Length: 243
Image 1 (tube, rainbow, N blue to C red):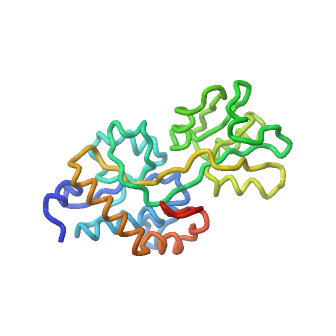
Image 2 (cartoon, rainbow, N blue to C red):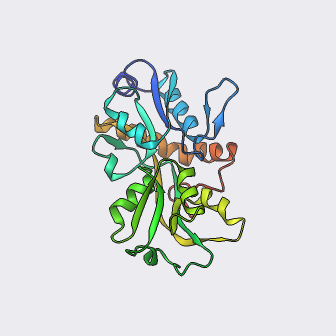
């Protein structure tokens, strides 16, 4: 039984306003017949609203950076966004509900063969600006140059047009570039994106409620069933499971 304090904290308007990052094609994968978003992230948002016994309303953002920037604007109550330390100043994050591998892509004849090779001062890397993996690279690269792209496609175009040496992106998207045999994926991943539910800084009990709900959704198969329904079970992994 959900107490009113939790309901008021997570849905103060009486409706759960769920912020979605539309650029994450793995988690927001299309639209339902009624025009509402379809995918794993919308499924989880609806599930949280159902547990709270309130309606769910989606608030769409074109990029994760825009979603994060709106944390102080009172336009969303939960935001389905990757957990990153740079975002934690304004946002508390639940435990992750899925993991997404991020890798480097190089040309087939490149001398770069490992993640360590890539962090050199004469290497340029394209990445979607303010994505979770871009934030990770900004915090962890010491020598390579990071070139900001305004979309995932833009980052891929920079690489495919020869404007950078390396492409950093989500593994499922990078695999599309492997069909020609002209490119090579660098193994292992350089980071795993922890896709979580973000909330504005609040009572720790609210975050614990979300953590418990997500743990149950993983254990009882809700998340796995959603991954299968939306055709991404082979592209994402569950926390605690091997890739």
